[in-house]
Amino acid sequence: MRILNASGCLDALTAPDVARSLDAFVSKTITPLPREGNPPERIAETDVGMLNSIGLANPGSDRFLADHLPRLESLGVPLWVSVGGFAAADYAETCAALADVAAIELNLSCPNVDEAPESAAEIVAACRAATPLPLYAKLSPAAWDIAEVARAVEAAGADGLSLVNTIRGLVLDDRTLRPRLERGAGGYSGPPLKPIALAAVHACHRATSLPIVGMGGVSTGRDALDLIACGATHVALGTVLFGDPDAPERIRSELAAEAAAYGFAAPAEARGIAHETVVVTANTDARPDQKSLVIGKNLDA
Amino acid sequence: MRRESLNVAGSEAVGPYTLLRLERGALEPGIPGQFFMLHPPGHVLPRPMSLCSAPEGQLTFLIDAIGSGTRALAALRAGERIFVLGPLGNGYDLDSDRPLLVGGGIGVAPFPYLSERLGAPPALLGFRSDWHAEAAELVPNSEVVIDPVLVTEPLEKVAQSHNVFACGPEPMLRAVQAVAPDAQLAWEAPMACGFGACYGCAVEIGGELKRLCIEGPVLGRRVRARAGAGA
Image (cartoon, rainbow over all chains, first blue to last red; front, side, top):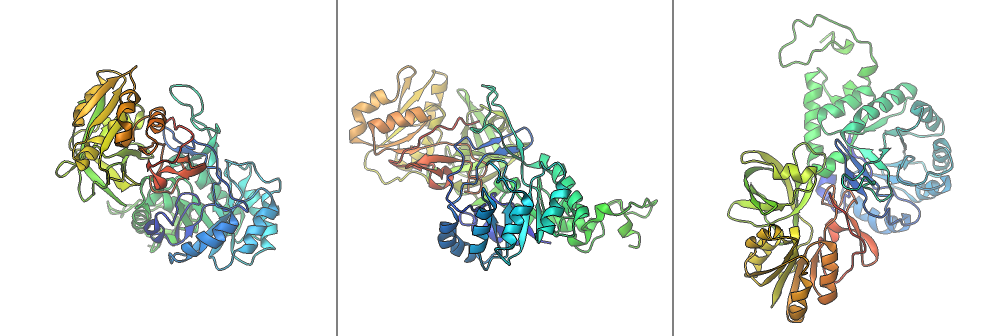
């Protein structure tokens, strides 16, 4: 069980100590050509979350490989590179240029740019042919049937899933009743994304045998445990990092304590427990400091 | 970069603004013009605020309560706690023979600390009303103009013989820059993080969209092309 950052939610070069507090660092999405990103305003807080409309700002793959990658590698943190594009060939080109990174995450789900015309599975297949590195497909929770997409990318050669990206949302300015973000809609994230992420992880764990990086609205160890219980192998932190760069250490220790309170020797033991049949017990022996353990796994404990 | 839960020492009204006093814990005040991220209770994101002053054992921030986050900050009472991250970004270059502070509205926020570090230089401050101008009492040696008179009017007579340190709304900064091209200007943009992670504070600097939290917030002769509405 590893704790990562969600792509685009941390710059390891401006906050190296935060990156080192993670088990792996996921880069901002890299596209073949440099992108300045969307015009400001790019961020807006909502009542219970936030919107972003960054628009895949990045230096482009040439400059990333020549300038950023060596500096990221020198941090000593396992590196995942997020790869994006506007056609399957874009993704494959960047994948082919990468070597010696821990994994590649294919961003198939940015809500702030126009999508590639090919399906997620076609993009994964093109990248599979271009690299032997582990490929994680990052999917959108807006898919009508995310389990179907997950099965398709598994068949196309994906080694894992990253679930979920932000979901499109919009917020109006109090004074003008106009969108706060220059582009209107943006990617919605923060605590309200958690139930959406749990549903996606739950469905995809059932539909595939792939390891899953669960993310979406994690701000406590309990949030992380919920994702693991639904089927996540690893957990990534997004919006919480903006307000609390110390979150990785805090959530790691909270997660260990939460897992222990449910009787798991380690958080990874809870993986998929949400799919197991609930067995109701009288639970009369539970100590006040114990969670009410009525799940099958703990009947022997 | 250090984040701590700080104790609220108290707050006081300064005209329409609120001066929030925090016990500083182990946080350093940094360089004038640098900023801190203050996390309002009940909000997902913290808010960027430049340090107003650094009295013994305290950090103070001048808050203009214009949105839900700033209202929550202004409502903090003594004994409550708040998470603060900082100091962040690049402050003013204090190496100056003849400093002159030029500010407008809530843009005077960093001036009490700046004035202290520069030895109480003269200051030209513009406000939209006498009530707002009560904030000028925080800045020694200040001359106040009230709308419709703009700070650039008195500035034109003295700009050539001074090093201008400016902070205020974007139209004011542009006008100051037209009169004093070498002025150091403190800009503003909405930020989610303050340390380069979110890319939300991108502004056009020298023709490119760059992160204000990393490049600024104090910029020299470079130009920012578009205002942030703020919230």
